[in-house]
Picture (cartoon, rainbow, N blue to C red):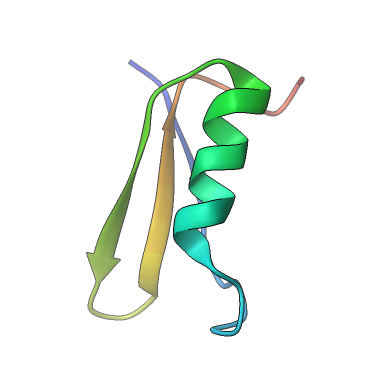
Length: 51
């Protein structure tokens, strides 16, 4: 499976709301993961580059 990751967003953005909007817009599943170096990272299933 392919994953699309969104990282490096400013901390003032509500990443839970962004994840919900991305899941609705791209019709895919997604999750928030905590990375030691990058902080919170949004992972979306599938290749979302073309959408």
